[in-house]
Amino acid sequence: MINNITKMIQNEAAALDRHNVFVKNVTETGVVYALKNEDGYATSSSNELEGDDGEPVEMICFWSDKALAQSCIEEEWADYEVEALTVADFLENWCIGMSNEGVIAGTNFDSKMLGYEIEPLDLILEIIEAYIGLNKELPLKKFDDINDLEKQVRRIVE
Image 1 (tube, rainbow, N blue to C red):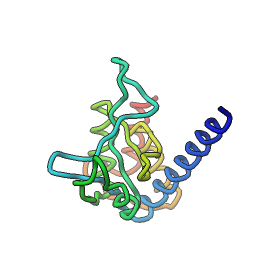
Image 2: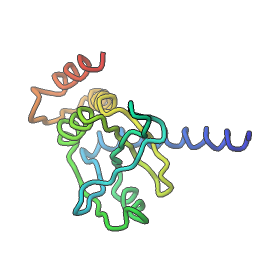
Image 3: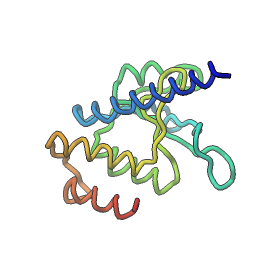
């Protein structure tokens, strides 16, 4: 039992570390990776969150590194290909859309399907914080600037 608990804690710590790398890398590169096939994007079920119906919440997985995304193309995702998204598109369209649909984001999952699960609006705020910390601009189409996006997301979250 203790070994299982230790392993679970180690997995959670590794997932958080990979998530922090996700935020750092997408902020530096301006690119987010997803897996896509003719039916859509790679999804999974949350290991942590349940909907009102008691079923796991749907999750779309994203990566900050093309090679890491590529390493997950196996088994049920064997017919998927890596697709690059701009961070602006990811924040303005993906994260906001996922939030509206009740879907969460999974970041930097590995081939064993271990990764970090996060509410999309919280992910937006983490990425914005990283951009502000680097004093880096983010060209947005649907918002005046990064501060406008942050203000509107915070209004929803709080």
